[in-house]
Image (cartoon, rainbow, N blue to C red; front, top):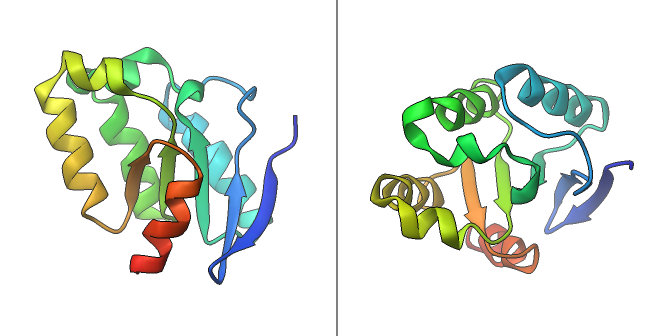
Length: 122
């Protein structure tokens, strides 16, 4: 269940294993950030399925807290996977994802192949 580290468009990318532990609090984000630092990663990719469902309910504050940790450590994060059901259920989440995807710190992508396009734009 090891994370994979590879090069993509000049970035060292750590792709978290989909079967890793659930991410539900700031400490979980810090564990990933520490692993990324150990691997000297410039960017972290986390499968959407790793997140506790409450992450996608913005009123819980979990998403903001977790993403803020990545921002604080200046480590971009891409959350990859189908979150369509969550987006359908929440206009606030749709707005949050849209704003994130237009920023530099956190991106929500449907699949890993979309990351290459995102990095090409940068």
